[in-house]
Length: 301
Length: 302
Image (cartoon, rainbow over all chains, first blue to last red; front, top):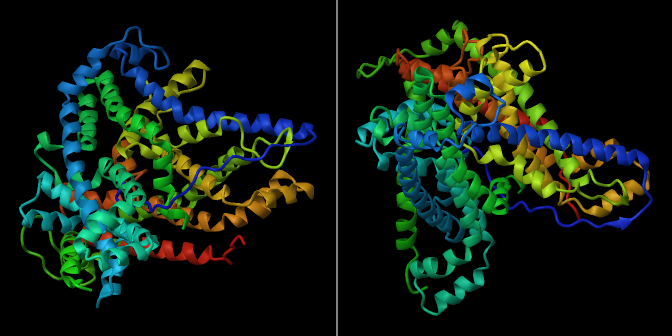
């Protein structure tokens, strides 16, 4: 998934619907049962693979090979321990956290400042610069891969975390700027004018007044960028080759899948996948509304 | 104004602009230039060869094979995903009108929305690796089920006839949930009285969907179409991790072809960039066509 995949908007959950009393119709009862059936089937199709991964992470390799649908005979947490230490999933997890912390901070800072300037100030070349940024949403990241490799290498940043952070941030800017410019434009101008008249400087105005006012928009776009940075695979695969102690989680999992193929360590692979999945699912379940709204947002405008 | 605005504009705009030009704009521009050279590997030698790379591509069966697969993805994935997305979104927001008039969602619709969206927050890498195990011929979930009911157990990803379709199914599986939520949000913006009026007139559920819901959702469907079309022209991560294009190139896609050409054993950077340029124009064409084909009068609720 590249960071340019998907725009956002502020989609809302459907509101409560009215329940007017009315005569029942038998035909509709059948439809109702059928529709529940279809919904359940798709729900099962979604949950079953994940549940299977979770259960298999406790099985022994023998159990996995002999009976894919069986339950684990015991709660083998040593699979998890093996994936965490021997397959270095723990380290990759930490690496990903470091890279994403840096890239997300950078993206939000640079994206918010640029968007603020585009939304609030008139200057020559503004249109050109804005469309230069936003046009980046259109391009497939593939086209840039080869030259990007050399740009990063010439900058001495190949195989380094700062290199990844800068590149993630650069490729997230088009959408971030697009979304936040629209958001800053919706904020009332009166507050800013009052602050300027009161002698507030332009910089203070941004950090003390505008940024706090833009919080809902910042949160939406931060969630979007967090997921796309955390799940990034193509960029690290090209820019972080070689030294596997610096791999991010997505690379570490593919490395685990490859070594699992040689060793037949199926339980270790399932444990690694589960460790990588659980935190994301927990965060998602906790912030479901914001995440769904954040990810489907821009599309509805 | 007491303080000039230019110090702020410069401090706020220059760093992002510099970063963006260095890592995004300049590689894109260089890619076009590199595509007209014979640059091989890590040597500095890159002779200009004009359009020779593009001519070579016309006779490259592997590239055509990959483009063919992307064309199938383009024809099938958006239709299936949008179809299923609309179907489930309709069920969720209107399925429960059994004993009441008006339009109500089914019970547990919040729960369904939570679950359907799961694949969207997972990394494509996890999805690809998990499904590779599900399709595993011996100890996979799928063949475990088929064996239990006494059906033959195919090799799925190991069979050139099925490998590509298995990847395609995962692509649809991982996208449907997002569009259920997206369409659901758009449907909730449609005024309820419209549905109530239509129901009073005795319209069936199918007519309601076809004549009311879909026309009113058209903008959203159009956006979905464009995003899915762009995703169908990619498919790189799923294919690379699930089949690596095999067996025998049966599931190859253009993105993987480009990646292998550049970072595989040969490192033909000139040729790979030419493939990238073709991808770029394909994506652009598809996006523009999707926009034009789907253009309709915009409906605003008064």
